[in-house]
Length: 112
Image (cartoon, rainbow, N blue to C red):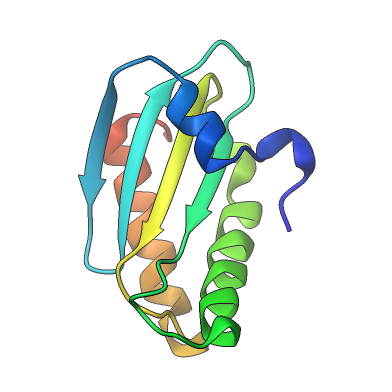
């Protein structure tokens, strides 16, 4: 789990009135909004339509959080980030997920 200072909720993300930019990859969609807070804040969404089983949706969420937690120091602050899964992510997909997240963060200007 991400530390609480790096988390926000979907309604909290929606209340942010800044304009958003969206970036897409094969496993994820990333939506970025500017924020007044100096740290990056994340929302991770795994829709129920991907799989009805909560255990697989939660596993996907935990894998995304683990990849984020490792790279948290490389991400610039002052943004709210919504990460939406397009597919259920298995343990074998971690390397691909790591590459896609780093590419999306570079594309959006959040990482070096």
